[in-house]
Image (cartoon, rainbow, N blue to C red):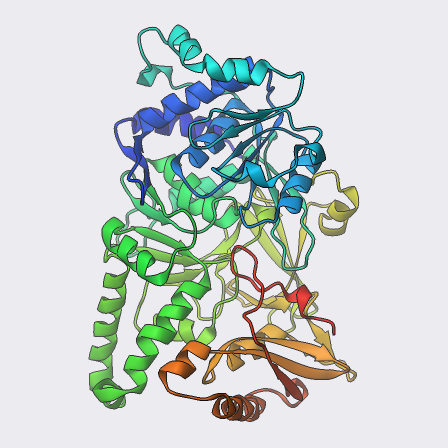
Length: 562
């Protein structure tokens, strides 16, 4: 158990940085200082206390990333309640099931969300408050206390703080490290959503690591007072929440909220305005930048010729890096990618131009971080090393450096278990504390972790060869006119499901017949790039993009069988 405690870290940070800006909504321009946020938190603490919400009770939260979403989250955990953040992309039935399964007593919901749900299907829910202004939206019949307290909340607040709310009034609950504080339901590429029980200690482990990370090039910390993040990943997801939001609060950073994943133009404009010092992203963002912005420069025109001349290409790499850094605001010290595997061609090029890229590995069950490495030490196609002093990693394999085996992890960040699901907990949490990740990988002598694929997606051939579809997909996705792909087994034959890049085809004036011919040629090329037992026998052209989770991972289970 760690000595640090996240709730007390927040109490100290809010006091120390009370005059700094903490939250800004990019579109509405609403901003709060740490003191103003603490005042809103104190008001919600009164609401929770006066309505009979006890420490340990569940508080559900759904809505787009905005200022009051963040206030409700921090108010709940600093009161000692368990926050249950729900991804806004979940359908109404899934949301109702999570609220019921989690036994949430109240719900904070964004504008227009509550209208989608049926209160009769959530018998344990007592009240709902809107994230617009925290006013009452719904209370169960014969339960009037929530509306009564909501109506006189300003009066109650004035009575408690007659001289006004000041820095000395910032006081958060004593919540022991072993207590559950977050119940996070996985979005799941496998189709099943489980409630991951995370303790104060689990979150503290992630925050201590973020707080103490030092840039080896500058000797300064990546997260620091006044540092900036631009939040465009869903905060209800463990990755975006931890490093766009929770980590910045620990150090006195400034979070600008974009709502949800914006269009490329809005994202670029926002980067220019905010100039984030740390960027947390999923691979898709950088992959699109590489395909749409960088590749055309490298393959066409004068630059494509210059790139073939050794002395010139080094200079051009510097120019491309400068343009790329400028497009992200020009002040980014580290670009952290996680949530899904990254295309290796994109990664290799970004590393070649010394872009400050690192790829971490994590999962909701570890709140989320497991491994990390600084950009200058980062090894291509790896996902870093275990967090020193916080997490340990081992590979279940007779030769962990060469033969892939399941990745097991242990340490401060490992979850308490799955809520009300002892069977699922026993399946992944071993008695000695090791957590089965369900991922396959190898680890080199220096401790760098290389993920090969998911245990569940690995295909075992008739002659005992292991095929990792993700590795074949990575190669296929680099070929012309391929937007995305999946490799599946159909009747014993490796089959490629391919989504063509229709937009690029239109730009280049390529018709359907020519596009099909290009895809066929791609399959031939692919089969020269893989082992004999990995060759693709069939392909199918998909009419629509694959369905994805909020973190942009493909829901593979929807396409496995046919």
